Length: 299
Image (cartoon, rainbow, N blue to C red; front, side, top):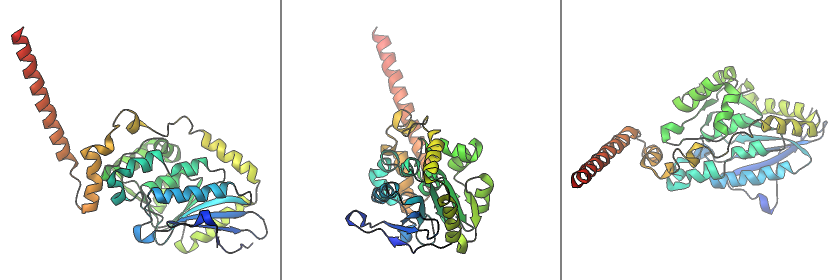
């Protein structure tokens, strides 16, 4: 079976700076594949709002093109990606990126099945984007993991419990709380990916999976994808951070420390911040108790 060549999608609305958006079509089966590639290899394909905005435009087009049956998400160069741009995030845009404009919504609301083609680093936002895809095909050099607590970037909302659905609650907590890295084979054992192949065979394997998807009813696939995604409707997209636990997290010293330490290439100093917080609490408590004693004396 054969494919047409990848062709960049042209037009006024598709002049992208941070992604490549291409389509190709299957000669025998009919139907095609859209590929969205984050194209910032010199920056580990890290994402900003501009990246996600371009991805939204590409996904919108692919989902409204009746000829397209599958969407592939990829990363240019040696890595799938290393999450959000920490240097950019430290300027106060992290909350907007992860909570007001989450890239995982692209996957969840896509009508068409989405395959993540992963090589090299797949960390942070790229990792949870990949596990929110319908399928994940990994090269044997892939490395998966979360880094949030290391850079004081917490996460909540649907993509945290979604990982419990993928790998189980214990593994999910391990991945998010301990920030460990996992090889492609470990990811396969955990159920984080569907298949592991040699790097040189990654594109060919993704093509094979696309062929299988194109060989069945595209309408049925859309219904099935929506049915599988429906199980997540009980989880709020905006979770405990934005609601009540730490509504001002990204303005707090600890919320800023991780990104600052990463940029400065130094270990984060989280516990000295907590020590100062503890001292301040004791000071305020002492002042309150002193004031209360004076009031009792006056009475």
